[in-house]
Length: 209
Image (tube, rainbow, N blue to C red; front, side, top):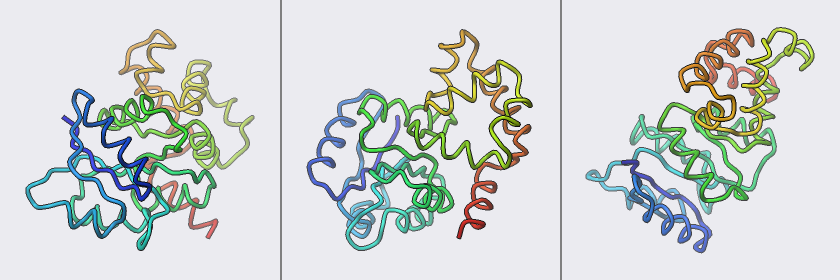
């Protein structure tokens, strides 16, 4: 069971998300609110939260500032941004603050659900356009040089990441096992000289600041 929180100031969107996930098997929507302070007030000590879907633009503290407060309250709680912002600055601010996913608001409810399930299984859900920007920052050299380092299968896996596919969807597309997909992803990270995704992103973002 995924215990989910919704942090969204648009009442209609918040209601839609809350209603949708409350009806989904394997989900329970435990807390929802329109700003960080109200969300934390509604989150009592008896309520478990595994994940929070959070907008960035909120009244008072931003969703990015809210990540720090959520993580202090529950370090293992995963925060996924659900926002209209797709500019690199916002993306990397959120990821450096500790967000483990970044989805755009035009993402369908089904895809958001699949993304959260992927997160539970060790993935990092991102909308395709966002994934492309993250992959670009993973690679300090040109895309052409990167492709020379990857095997044909690894190139297919990377393409799937850029398209925003989950590990499971990638396995189905390529007719390979989920464990094989995970192994290829580890190999890709090694060839990109990535030991820690969060550390790499933080380093890249600091260079931009």
